[in-house]
View 1 (cartoon, rainbow, N blue to C red):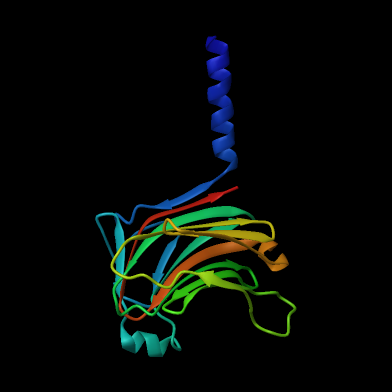
View 2: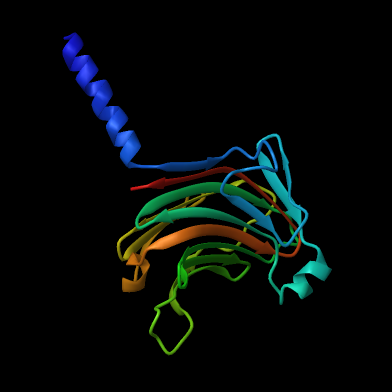
Length: 195
């Protein structure tokens, strides 16, 4: 019986080693793979918060504050929660490859859309869907993005789950980012797990 328990424990340990995990508890401004850019980010009590600086927004060609995470992966599940104040116009999650964007989730007052970035297409990006909910403000909104091969499952809040498919989603990814435009955004519970 002890041998079986030891074998199960070792097997679980090996499986955990095969699926690297990235988490950010936002306890400090320092994190080995996080880059907080284009705004005055604060990290307090497990929450990352930033208010857009309009001068920086213009300096960075109409791009708002962003958190980058170096996280090389093919397939992964990413979870986080955000709370937007009423002035926030967009929240954008992106998985990037060595040659640019691979997958993007954009949430705004018009709804949520998913975009693919085929490397050899005439267009810079392709809308894969616009079936998601509109940006909600004031409450914590949990988000899960599961990237597996050519499929991306998106879960937002408790009412929306949809799977999107595009061949370019299967490309290798090198980092993840979460950004926004206008107002103040708070983020917590950031976890990315290779699958």
